[in-house]
Image (cartoon, rainbow, N blue to C red; front, side):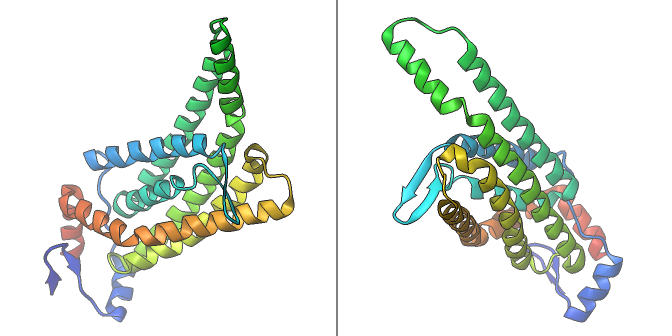
Length: 250
């Protein structure tokens, strides 16, 4: 019996355990316009969240940074990429995010180093630009280290669970990998980024790390209904994925 809209096999728990031992999970080919869009969005979000993260933000009792609303989107893109295109495609996307973040720092460094105008407005403008973008390398270092470790943790858990359950248990894969990946990411990121944001005490750091982890995890959980629909839509409209599913079911 098949669910024709998504070509997902319906099996009992015992049957799915047997299948997972003999049937490889389906993944689409990387040479796809959908993959290009996901890769581009991830790189843009990583760069913008690193810039926004250099601003400390106080929301009542919560200490956070200006990139708090952006970074969960990078993990959503990572989840979608891993689920549909596999660990190699996800690794390529993560590395490209790393390269783009480093490139942004080099570009900002070059912009600051270029000689500017000498009128009072331009001098004050250039000084503000240097203050804002000068320490960004440390924020990017924090973001890159956290992102690399967290996204790899996230992707490895996703592919291992998919190898076990195939097309079943998508929500469990998304939620389980998110919690582990965000925990690794947040600890590393906050340890490096705290001085840039302006956090000086251990209590502030704990607040920053705890609420950062809580917010990013809950934000991703809130996005799960949308994420699953996007994944289902791309799977349905990705010919190479449907081909792999047909071969798997046959």
